Image (cartoon, rainbow over all chains, first blue to last red; front, side, top):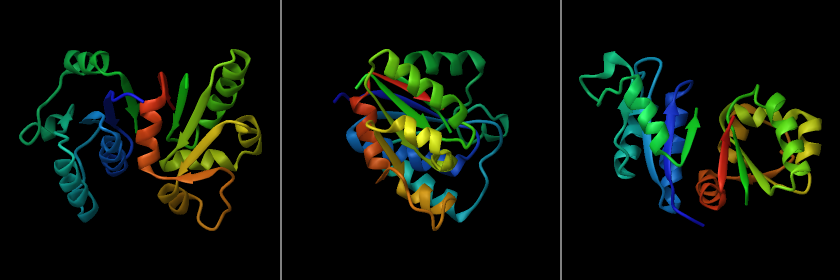
Length: 92
Length: 95
């Protein structure tokens, strides 16, 4: 068993990606999360998941320009660097 | 464990079956974790047969969400097991 650096790309379902990312911290992994494709929908489920991320010390980033006021914005090169730096990249 | 297949989409089964068979030919040890719409792939009998003898786990929450009322053909689990499998795996294939 070894702790790993895991990168979760939130593409198809942001809520599911947040749930999975938070769960992955249980065994001590360092987890990064990047919101992609579109802005995160404002909903009660997503609000709860954001609180879950905070509890798990996950600070999300994004490639979505519309979220740049709230989250660090990654350009293509920065995203490639994050993928290269991770032990595991998951796409959700 | 050499490989962990992390299955998240309903279309992943078409890729997973040949990958599992290739892993067996290579004598690689592997497991599979199914979450979100990836649980739907387990309705494919060929996939379930290919996984026989290896550890396959579904996120129980996802199973109830996407396959309500159906009997689950593999081990029920949670995101806790997902996290544990990530720790055990040498490599992870995200599908």
